[in-house]
Length: 97
Image 1: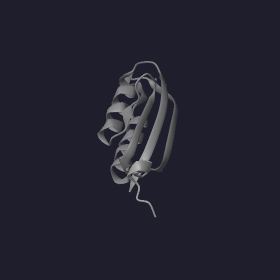
Image 2: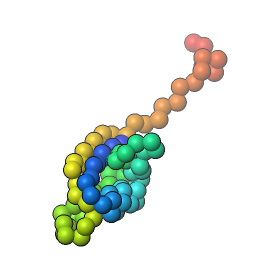
Image 3: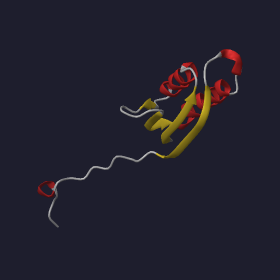
Image 4: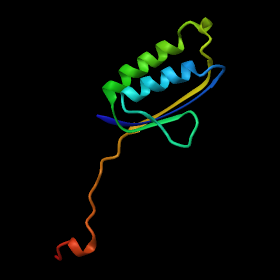
């Protein structure tokens, strides 16, 4: 099964934690959206791969706060089924009944 996944995060302090979390998301096809801050999106992400990487994301978030890597303000995750591409032919290609 493929998912569409949108993640929004904000942080305070240093950017180390945000960088590490972003790299984790990219491993399963969730990419940083251009011209946005703190938003990543994947349009057809493997459910199995995303679950593995989100487990690692949560492990990073629960790690030692004393590492001067910044702190999470919020984490928002939206997941729904990936849209299947449908092919619509222009009228001049359709057969007449």
